[in-house]
Length: 114
Image 1 (cartoon, rainbow, N blue to C red):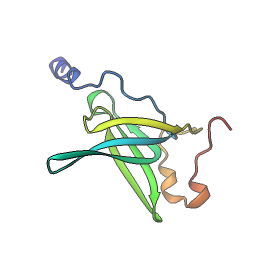
Image 2: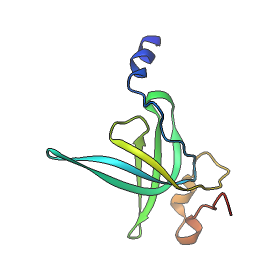
Image 3: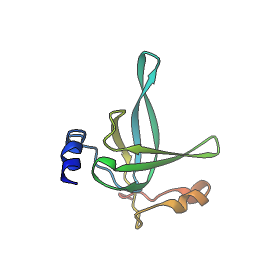
Image 4: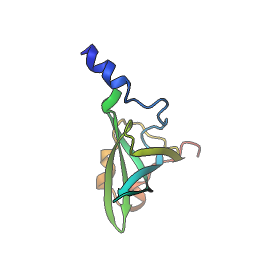
């Protein structure tokens, strides 16, 4: 097990972005189009963080054209360029899966500084 941790240490990012559950985040993702690459942004509420170490992931949810869209991003992936915190949320849960059943204003998270 220690050998696996030593191998995984090389793939860890030096300083991954710091954000919490309930924060509205903007994830900059590197997309490969043939031989070109570009940055695409995905903005939404962080509803979950899972695991730890090299396999740590976070789930971002947004509603686009009336349809809920969720994406799971690995924290230490080279395709995730950076994660910006747009707004900090005030929540009392570790997983915000209950937002999936809410619509409109009920699906909002309170702001931390309000």
